[in-house]
Image (tube, rainbow, N blue to C red):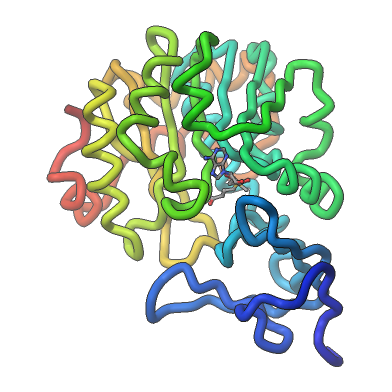
Length: 304
Ligand code: SAM
């Protein structure tokens, strides 16, 4: 590949040596992506935003030097973060998405014919605008759906103040630093509990346990103070380095974590959710089976 990719916006971040993007989420370990073109790059009022093209993952969005979403593997995370809570709930009508600026969660939630409204609270308008412009395959038409309510605000403030109620809350946030840090606090989880209707479910992006074990114990402790039943389920997202990802789970009813695959299959059929690329009812049920080291970080057990 000839020459350095043309960079849009101001200068180039120090994590793009030559024609490579180096993610530096972890100390002592980096993952690099060959860059064929930088499509957009800007320091927004909240974070460093870059969208670039790669031979392996297609177009990639990174925020503050952390990979957020790639065209090639986004379906894994977006299907598991959305269909597991909605089909476990069984009668989800109103969904709240916190973060999720690329529109992937929104797109998947709107595939359920029973979902009447998806409120998405995203702090950075630039993420929505730039994903619509440079990664349109991810949001698709989701932002134009009549059931979509896009709110540009801090998610923590929204759950503390809104008088709306939701059946499922999906926290598709960045990692616990910068604008996302507030979305990993006990106050935020209490706010999520407050806005959930009885029988409601909260799920949250909870990092890669092999590389970020501290996030397991941290969020467990904090979610446990707001919810009767807390735990995790897992999904393997290739571009999230370090092995499978844990997705945080919280509700007041332990049975919601153990809905049999046959029931999920019936609900999936009824919801009109046809072709998925990662999610299956069997995988839904199996994804709550956790490795011993993760259970160890949880204090040896899920639930209360
Ligand atoms: N799937 C990705 C992951 O697992 O890391 C997350 C993708 S999504 C782009 C993360 C979004 O969270 C970003 O658009 C960011 O602007 C948003 N965000 C961060 N802090 C926020 C806050 N306090 N309130 C609302 N949105 C926030």
